[in-house]
Length: 358
Image (cartoon, rainbow, N blue to C red; front, top):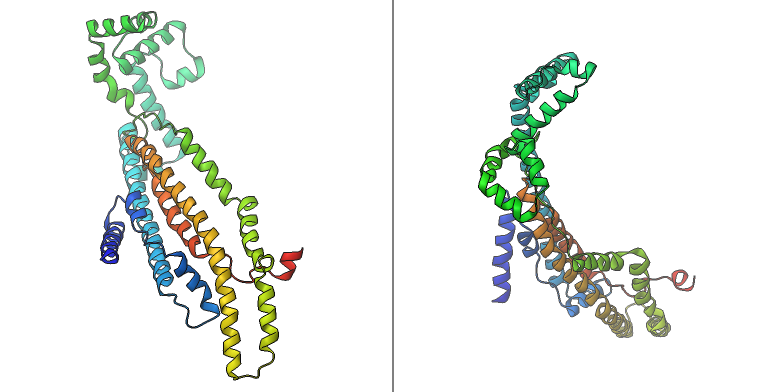
């Protein structure tokens, strides 16, 4: 019943990944199949030594996991393509609004034509701001003090709906006085009325949004994960486990059995008995290896789950600015990729004699 419930959930998540334009981190992480048990992994590791080893559980896990990773990456690529098309449309609108031409038309114009068009637009803007010089004159002659004041006054009026005199008065008030003054003069209404002009940009509808401030715990989790995955920490941990094949006496026991095996001819019943004894030794090592390897990978997965929760909050802020928030999804995919490591504990004889003694 539990397996059927997960299968239905996993299929639903995979369907979402395959069909939805907006893939979510929850859908990506939810597509991860149930983890195999430690004993199932031990049996999987024994596949090279005996045909009796059961690998079905791990084979199914890896098959479903790779499918989930492929589906997630495909959905993310599709989502990025949609975002790119959206950005292109916004850019097209921006160029059309600011220059009165399409991007294709702009690409086909010469440098001189683009410069002339830019000057024309700049001249119109300066005229609206009350500046009596055109762009070329400003480049050659600069602006007088009176013209600079006129420009500042015009820009302040357009951006805030307030005069420079009002802005100066506000800057000298306390916060409480500013609130009272703004209410009395109806400045909130003026600023709201002028906000679209001030907020418009080359992107079209870009909003100014304060980025998410990550917590100390988020940074601590990242540092811990980076430390665990660094070569300086990961490699010695793996080597320490692998070396137990020798230091734990497993290789010595195999060598004794190899001497016993040499007494038999090919096909002798005694050979199978010795092979069985060897596999008992190998399975003991696999069980010890997995016992320490498995919890370490589970710790990484737990950290990634915690990181993803705050990444989602950061993505929410990013999306408020009209951009694609991808931090949480990237962490969810990393979660799936890390889950592969569950079945990669050091195997019997992984280190050669040279590796061990150098």
